[in-house]
Amino acid sequence: MNQSYDPVIETKTKILDTAERLFGERGYSATSLRDIVAGAGVNLAAVHYHFGSKEELLDQVVLRKAAPVNVERLRLLDQVEAEAGTAPPPVDQVLEAFFLPMAAAAECNPPFVRMMGRMLAEGLMMGIVAKHFQEVTRRTQSALRRALPQLPEEELLWRIHFMIGAMAHTMCGPPDFTQRGADLGDFRSRIGRLVSFLSGGFQAPIRESREEQ
Image 1 (cartoon, rainbow, N blue to C red):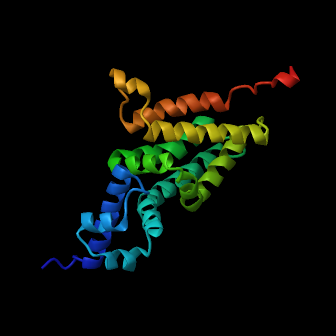
Image 2 (image 1 turned 45 degrees about the vertical axis):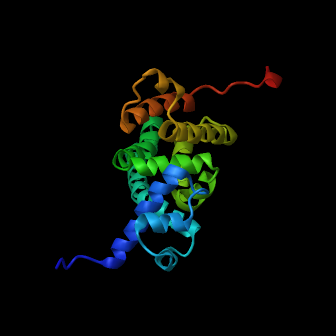
């Protein structure tokens, strides 16, 4: 008998894997706990025992994949800022610290990327970010502020807003031109293009409003 076998861990893993798959295929709202129970081959009591509710189950599905990504993001941000010393850190390196761990995780977990795309489409992403990405968001914003001291705070926040939208579309929403045979490449290739695009955007001159012209 395998001494490392743990039926509790196996049951939790089955539930998490099934929830991730079904949330990605059907969406959060269209997936019931009973659907997850049937797919995982467990009973409803097991879901309630381990996770309590569907909302808490979603939190755990996100956390098990997001937590290692966030740890690596923070490690890379520490490295970029330490290397910069008192100088502004390079914008592209700050962006790579934020995006590359996500790209690496996405390569290994396509179902999770699909699920996050569904969460975005259902308007649940803001709540997920607030629960699971707040520290990384704060640190990245701080690093970008150091990297771009010439940008007023409001302008920086707008550009970060555009960054998040571009990230979500790049990772979770293939562009229309894929229907015409274009090659998206792997997630790392997509992120390389995105970092190049955003680096230019963050460093672009501020556009004067019509009232100021």
